[in-house]
Length: 334
Image 1: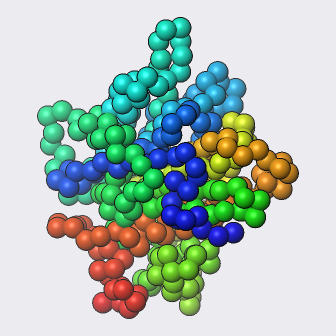
Image 2 (image 1 turned 30 degrees about the vertical axis):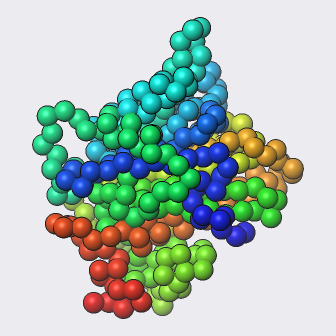
């Protein structure tokens, strides 16, 4: 496998991603959309989820495709971002047809960033506007790190953020991942600059330091305040998949979360993975291709998580250091 040309989820042809964030709020929203509806599924493994429209993604539900998926900060308030995205889709004439009416289908999930030092004393929720701005900004290239839904994200020890990665399989199928890392656990190993995801790194996409020389043996303890947790992600492919097949890809992708964040899937996290299939390429070998898609989704997600932490930037009044402020360009502790 090799990364796609952008090393972003938008290497899956037809997908676009938009970010909108507010520095004073220290929060934001990220949306994934496309010109055409796409198959989507979801798998949840965290104990504290916050979601919108996820029940309709089950394989037996009537609606088979969605128009967009969003990831947002703001805890339950962030679910309001879906309103702004729906309005953008409605203005574009998009949505599930019910007679003469079109209803945009926009599932989403949120992370808790209400205690990250930002100004959360709003009179009206800022998230519908953030959702609309993110939708309007959707394009092939987008910022990572301190951006969009990852703007105010934190992890157990370092600032989190927004990450993405991609790969191209020998079959020619492309897989990508998009993630907001706001985990209770850590992306780096103990007090070292090394990432848990290091065995799957491509080139020097998150520093090129390789695996840690040792692994912590002690049982981990929660190092963040309760509630400040959750990693939410989207994995995508250009393969033609049913909702059931897409669901299996989401299940497999959680392995990547467990590889890159320690611990993960705790009772205090709302860890969740959406999966997307644009249907551009039929499976040539259903068994082998499905097998490889799950592995690629997990690998891309692990890499995207490490990139989110690695690319976070320092901001005034940060409550946590970034990877670079803690370890410097070469990974030497300061």
